[in-house]
Amino acid sequence: EVHLVESGGDLVQPGGSLRLSCAASGFSFSFYIMSWVRQAPGKGLEWVSTINRGASGTTYADSVKGRFTISRDNTKNTLYLQMNSLKPEDTAVYYCANRGPPIAPTHLRGQGTQVTVSS
Image 1 (spheres, rainbow, N blue to C red):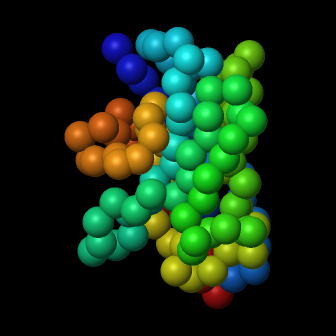
Image 2: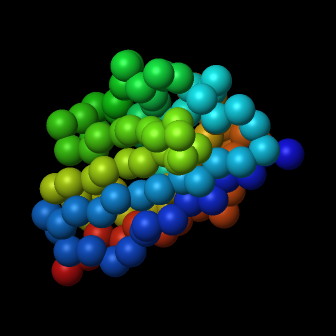
């Protein structure tokens, strides 16, 4: 059974940084494309970023390009999202998924981690 545990979310001031982690188990992590998505209050799921199996290719939503960096450690079965220059509009619950877009709520297997950007 696929198991994904997101962590690292917190309350941070605008301009601050956070690093999210996603611990994966129950599947062959290194064989899967991995993604981050987010859901802001009252809004639908928004794709954030995707990384290929070997970490040689990454893509980003325009809203986070240049500020967020996705990475993975296949030896630790862990996905990361480094978030810099955070803005209030980045406030959301962040989820990881073992697939590329499109990603629907039915594809999510973790509880998510809350990121709140506020002064």
